[in-house]
Image 1 (spheres, one colour):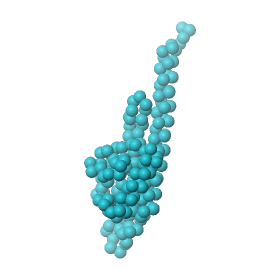
Image 2 (cartoon, helix red, strand yellow; image 1 turned 45 degrees about the vertical axis):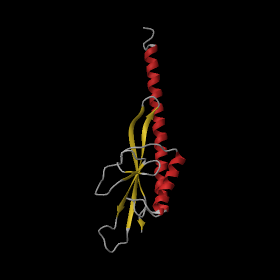
Image 3 (cartoon, helix red, strand yellow; image 1 turned 60 degrees about the vertical axis):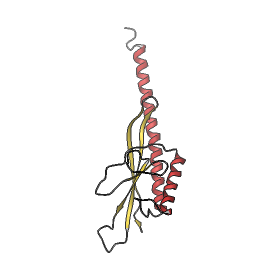
Length: 161
C-alpha cells in the first residue's frame, strides 16, 4: 500500500477543486457586474425623477430613460436574462429586454422595474413613490453553462412628481 490515494483519485480531486474555484470566480464576477448595472439603473431613474408612464413608455422622457439604461447595459457588457418576479401587493413588474423593448411576457427580461406608489390612499400627500429594479445574474460555468439564476433588487429614493 505505497499509494494510499491513486493517481486517478488525485486527478479527480484536483479537477473538482478547479471547477469549484472557477465556479466561485464566475459567480462573483457576474454578481459584481449585475450589482453595478442595478446601481446604474437606479441612478438613471433618480436623475430623471422617474417615469411619466411606466406601462406605456411612450413619452420622449421615458424613452430617454430606457435608452440611457440600454447604453449602460452595453457599457457593462450585461447579457443575462430571466423571468421577472411575481406580482406582490397588486403592483406590476415591467420587464425590458437588452434593446429596451417591453417584454410583455416578462419571461426573457434583462431587467424589471415597478413603481411603488406611496401616496396612493392619501389625498393630502403629493404624488410620491419609488421604483424597484431587478437585474439578474447566474452561475455560469464554462463546461456546464448556466446552472442557477439569481436576482438583485434595488430601490430608488422617494421621488416626488
